[in-house]
Image 1 (cartoon, rainbow, N blue to C red):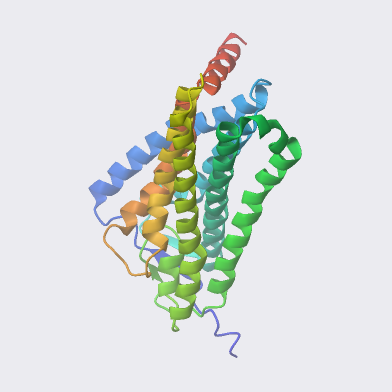
Image 2: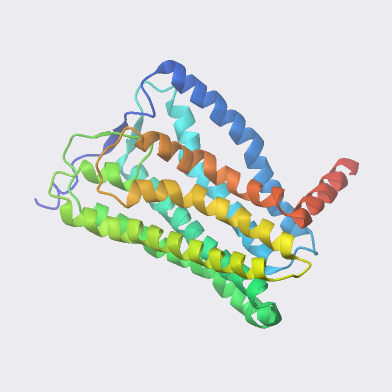
Length: 308
């Protein structure tokens, strides 16, 4: 009997991004335009890196994986949000909600760890260039590519297991436009204080530690570059500046959402919208616009496709 009553709620109802129909339509149009323009650009970045034999350095391998992670991440929330804007009832089943939550943290956690890997790559390339080919050999690169996927999976499965153990017996109105840990936990009909602490430790502390570690590593790199007089100084500064921009775009909203008690704030939905819909699509584009080699390769690939 206890097992049967464990989860009574079979579906959740989203309250949506906003109650204003005008704002919903504006969000729909802007998101759709953004999606149509930027998403193909991310796919083109991946195809360029795969097809160009000149882009074989670890940096481009990591950039291709970042574009793939971000493109995949953008499919978790945005398509359903766009459909739900025109739905009278924004309903998601319990299983679909847990699935969405799993992939959200699986890909998001993987991306955070990939940014750490990219920071390590830049540190070796700029601060220890003589050891770069030895340290960043193919075997190490493959391990470093696998680590974010494995780490993201472990991070996400912990969240899912903790939520699956909670009883949900109503209400079922989820104060968001997608399933995420803070809102789902609040609907559990039991004391969730201990679970919230575990979630904050798993998501919040991990996010904060990675963020501070990344900022420290890039501060060390930029200080090293500033003291050097090498020919590639401007290129190194440009690359590191781009990476720091991405760090703030990705970690800023995540720190706001996951490093505090799960109490609702008026800014939560806006921050979540940029974190799950806008920024993931922008990341690879920002990298590409600051990388001359990738831009040149993309132009060549585009010209070849037009000629063919």
